[in-house]
Length: 534
Image 1 (cartoon, rainbow, N blue to C red):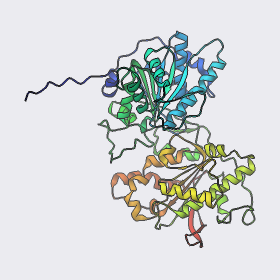
Image 2 (image 1 turned 30 degrees about the vertical axis):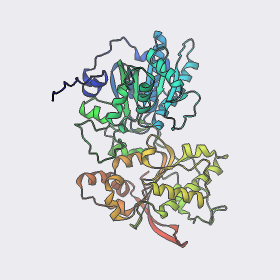
Image 3 (image 1 turned 45 degrees about the vertical axis):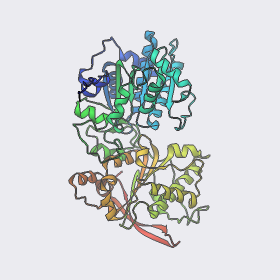
Image 4 (image 1 turned 90 degrees about the vertical axis):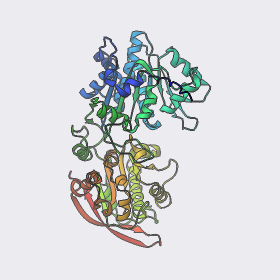
C-alpha cells in the first residue's frame, strides 16, 4: 500500500492568527481621530460616554482585537451600539462602505445590540445636519426562529430567496450593512449562497460578539472565518457571569481552546480587557455585594438610591378581591417594602427537590400583590410593560418554573396574555427588571449534594442577583445555605451565596408564611426574613 501525501492544512487568515497569535495580527495603518467620531455621534446618545466607555470605543478602531469587560449595568450594549454607529459614520465621511457583523450565543443578546444600534443610528441621522449615513440593518435567522418584530431591521430567514441577494452584497461591498446572526446561520448563508460552498468569506470589516463569555471558542472561530483580511474584532462579555453550556463535564482551564472565547483571549493570550465600571442598573445595596465578591476593580452604583416605585397601603385583614385560593399575610407587604432593597426568605430543610410548592405559592402571592399595587398606583397597568420591565422570576429547574406558573394562573388570577415571565437563570442573562424574585427550590439536603456544583455556582448567583434594578427577593432553604461541600473548589464557590445570606443579609426577623398543602390544609411555615443593611 502506498501512503498518500496529505495536503497541508489550509491556514485561513485572519481567523488563524486571531485564535493562535492575536498579538501578531498585522496592524492597520490609518490616521483616525476617534474623539471627532465621538463628537459626531454624541447627539444620538442619551448619556455621554464616560472615560472607560470612550476607551472601549477608541480601541475598536485602533486595535485589531479588543475586549470589553462589561459587569452588570455598565452600559456594554450602548458602547457596542456606539461602535457600530462610529464605523457607519466613518464610512460615510470617507465615502466608503462598511460591513459590520453582530454575533452572540443567542438571538436575545444579538437582538439587543441590533436594536440599540439602529436606535442610535436613527437619532444620529435625524440630528446630524448635512451628514448622510446610508446603511441597512438585517437580522439573519433560521426558519424556525421568531422574527424580531422591529421594522427598522430587516428580518431575513436564512433560506429565503432574498438571502442570496444579501450574500452578494456582502461579497461585493456595494453598500454599508449591519448584519446580525448566530454563527451557524451566517455560516450557512455563506455556504449556501456563495460559489465557494464553504462557510469562509472575507465579509466583515468589523465583527462584534456580545456575551462572548457565553460563547465557546469553536463558535467564535466560525465567526472569525467570515472576517475581512484587515477586519477588527470586539469581544464583549463578563466572565464572572454564566459561561458556555456544554453537554459534558467541563473543567475551567486557561491552557486550552475549550474556554469561552473571552476567557481564552484574556487568560491564554493575555489580551487585557477594558473594564466598564459605572453601574447604571443596580442600587447600592444590590451592587455592593458583587462589587466586593466578583469585581475587584469595583463597581460604582450611579443610581444608589433607586427603589421600587410603590407606596405600601395599610390593609385591615385580607384585601378585598384577594384570591380565596391564595392565603394572605401582611408579611407580603413587608417582603415588598421598597425600603428593603434585598429580602431573603430562609426556612428549614425538607423534602423538596426539583419543585417546591411552598416557594411557588409564596412567589405567586408576592407577585400578585406587586401587580395589584402597580395597577392601583400606576393606572392603567400595561401588562407587557409589567413583564418586560417590572417583574422577572427566576428558578433553576423547569419543574419549578411550571409550578410557579400554575400557581400564578390557577391561584393568583394571572393571565397568559402576556404569559408570566418565569425562566431559568441561563435564559435571563442579559436582561433586567425593577424587581427580581428568585426561587432556589431545593430543600432536601441529600439532593443539594447531588447538584451542589450547579445550584451553588457563584456565576449563577451573580447573574441572579444583578438582574434586579430596585429590589431582589430570594427564597432559599437552610438545606442550601447550611450545606458543606466535601470538594474544596465547590466549597469556595458556595461561600459566595452562603455568605450573602448569612452575613450580608444580617438583619433578621422571625415570621411565619401561610401555605396550602397538597391536601388543602392551611399551614404556617416558620421562616427568617433577612434584609441587607441599608
